[in-house]
Length: 124
Length: 480
Image (cartoon, each protein chain N blue to C red):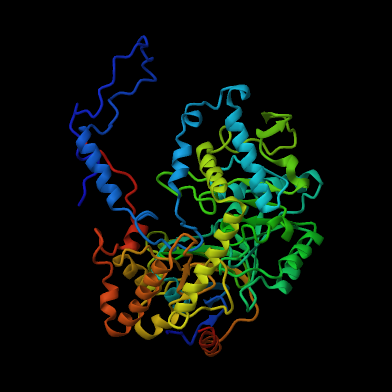
């Protein structure tokens, strides 16, 4: 399983990358592998605000429909519109494909890559 | 590739010649008239018969073979149900006829609701909802009205276990509630501590199926009911799994306030094709005033439809629901009788435990102990060792003429396969299915590619599910 050293991770198998005042969130290799082929992604609108635990996107794979939960609170700066036509990017390039770019994002309790690796090993 | 009925059509070819109409013709005003003839299929009778016979040969139903589709209760649908449902006294009446002219039909509906109330421990019931999810929505709307009438407008949250049927959160959402998910405990039941933390002043209710989707009886149900009731919430019972408990325990006695039933599961009416479904909703006395109207009632020896009920949530379906489905369920209950229904549940539970015992060393069962009418096993170990997933196992079963179990549900179990054999299968059928599943696990180790290629004996081999989901062709376009 592929884990990128430079990213932060959540227990819901999301990765977070900070760039200036923005936080980019996507799903990990573990998540995309568990979900299977992703066929549809429902995205939030720019300006939507989310609290910790809110579902901010919905991912539909051939197996199931799953909510993507926000690990913190923040406002959507933009969603990745590429996913509307090419949801499979979450399978083929999960770390290069963010789902939502947040601003004013506040979050606690993220894991480092090493901690996340240990966490997924325990999950299995 | 088989042709569609629209592709074998020939202009002016007919299966039936209708007699000349005796109704005077009428010129439809031009703004309402269609510009061209409708594209209806035009075929000869033999081509019509062959087309649909060919289609019927390509399906797999309970009458074709074993169908252990978890949560769906694919039990045998007795043919006597069809006989009673086709009695002209039932088929030649019209819903707009007077109660005086339809006493027999009303009596059947009244008796059926009385029997279903007895089976479930409910006070009253509506027969209107068209199927399970429609019943869920109806029950939730009644719960909403209950809270509103009491001035509890802050009660906007429906709690749903993370193992719930997907329709539960969906129905709650459509009924205007917010949904909060409750995690499962290590034994597969609802985590009581998490439930205590989740309830509050905003709790409108908890939706639950018992036995739950893992096929485990929620043994802490009385305590759960207490926690929800003390917070002012109501308990909703998803009747999808009632087949495990008929004549053993009643949802009403467990503390449930509202319940929906799936007559097309537990009470042997067809799921599709010959359907439609039916999702009666029962409730405790304190919610009876909110039931949809009209509801069938009895005064003296006379049956009538009660339309006046100002607190009712209103009508949820045209007329009284799917009446002929009610006739089938009524027939089923009378055919089996009280002891028969009780036996049906006991044998359903026995059959599921028999299969689980034979399979659990090969396909891991995530929660120990006895199961109820169904069980969840996982292909996770198989997938790690051989690359063969639950989906591959499901496809391989098709080659053996067995309908696969429900796969990838419940979501809390990876590579889940949910098996519900039902009470109507013989031990030989159960053994055969177990033998096939065990041999698939062996092939997975010896020749996994064979399973990746499955099914090979079906009319259509493995479908490209990704392409089908991404680019579905939902409509046949008629070339003009």
